Length: 64
Image 1 (tube, rainbow, N blue to C red):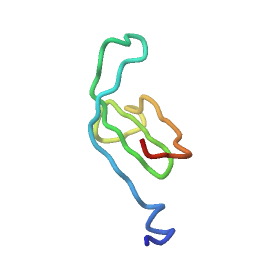
Image 2: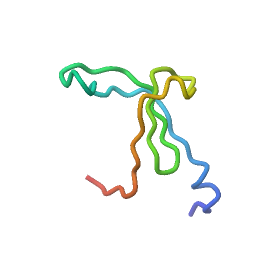
Image 3: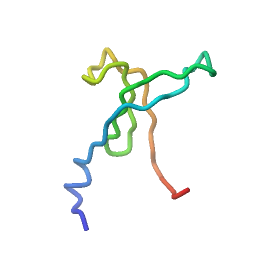
Image 4: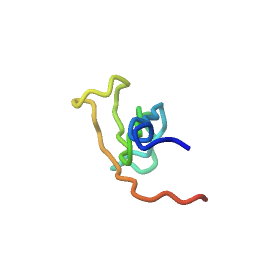
């Protein structure tokens, strides 16, 4: 079992496609970064604040 310290440091990241907010039929490639309970998405892989396009807070996850 992972300790609380290790769980806080978990970061998963990679490219995913997301539908654009205004043009629902168009998909764009974004760099996503899951850190703790927040999923950030960026236009560039470097994860700088100027490339941040949004974030989602994930409080509970249930299997599909």
